[in-house]
Length: 117
Image (cartoon, rainbow, N blue to C red; front, side, top):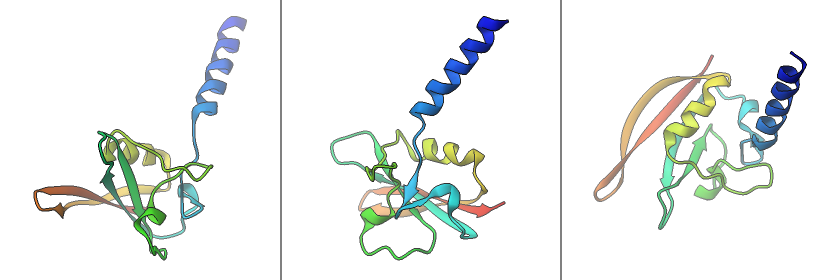
């Protein structure tokens, strides 16, 4: 029993140590006060990874200002927009609507709108 508790504690420490806070414009995603947020993926050049653009009504002079970043201000990469959408499962938001928008001549992307719970 003791070994099980120690193993569980160590696993939790490693899991929490690898978790990164997600921020947009210096605001933690968990602390956004807006009633709605909009999430869309931005393809990364020469990569299968995507950046996530999150808008909640903030002033965004450059698209890079809307990217989800870690605590160090580095843009976070995701395998897909759904990877980020799934990470919002434990937040104060729930999926409200999904639609597609034209992002290029022959490319469209899904846009996810979340509503505060």
